[in-house]
Amino acid sequence: MKKHVRWLLLAISVAMVLSMGRNTFSLLGKGNSIDEVEADVKKLEKEQVSLIELKERAESSEFVEKEAREKLGLVKPGDVVVVLPPEEILIKLAPSLDKQTFIEEKPIWERWSKMFLGL
Image 1 (spheres, rainbow, N blue to C red):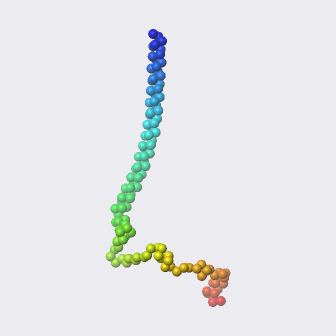
Image 2: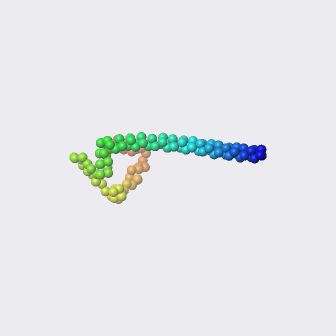
Image 3: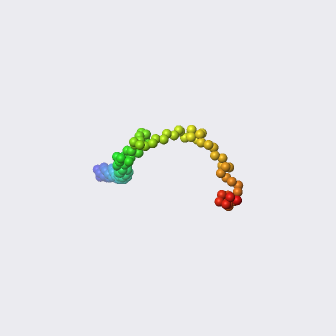
């Protein structure tokens, strides 16, 4: 009978140790998840602040006017609208510039004397 009691106490002790070990690891895991959630909360609070600032900017009359001008093409009365062709066409229409027209072989002091003194 004493043997059975000892084995029973040993089995109960092992079960308690295993249970406490599992609970300890569970608590450690929850502590890490709490830290992660707190970091997420801080990140979301920063995002909320930036969104509130964006909302305030979007409600300003300057922002509304800028968006209306840029995205909708609206103008104020009296404004002059200049419409340019696409950049590819502008490049084709622009005169070609030769670099040699701007570069002279003479030293700078000779060019200055020619310009100011006519020499």
